[in-house]
Image 1 (cartoon, rainbow, N blue to C red):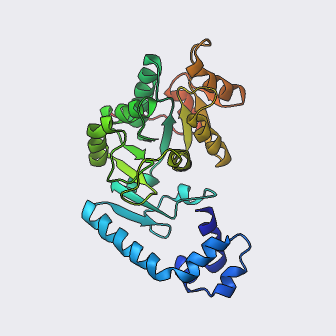
Image 2: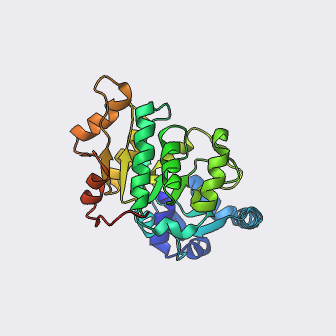
Image 3: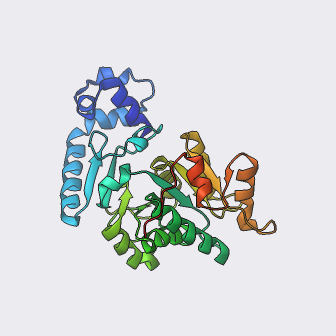
Length: 281
């Protein structure tokens, strides 16, 4: 994605990239030799693959958003390595609505799950879209809290939208598709391989005004999302926990490093300079 963004800035559009000569492409010092070969020698193969992807998207009822689509979220477009396109199941207009990301441990404590669900519901009642990664634990609690409050939520997947992962969340997957949006940068049929999840974290933070970390160990994927949020200029919030709990160590370190300590929904709204309106009934 980062290389493609550089190519678009250099040539003006994806169409112009494909129309560029080998000589012009070779002058791009950031372009690897294998990428140069693909761009020059495999254009027919790429066009066939693109046609197949469009057909699959139509069959599965998903929406495909490219950079230049009016519905592509503007905040996400601003990050250093935005996805070239997004597959969306549900309501693509939600991606541009004001929202907050909520992330945390998969093996969360009962305290963490309760806090995540309650806080997500409070934020959703103030008309903020709750974005998370659909994993077990804190992510699942955040999605459920938003839906229970009658709000909207976005699930960012690390696999194709035709695959439900984890399988235990199949019912939740259906609920989000009906009342929110499920998105992925990967093609349909892409399996949930481990290396894809750290990459999708930049999308979770990139869509959001800020990221709330509920529980995180000292070394965890959750902290990757927090640090990416800082690099993107987003606010980072952290929920304090027990001082003797390894699940709270990451949050406490974030607070030491300057993350906003969250005691209630008001702490988040005030930091984002959002007017605290009366919540929806």
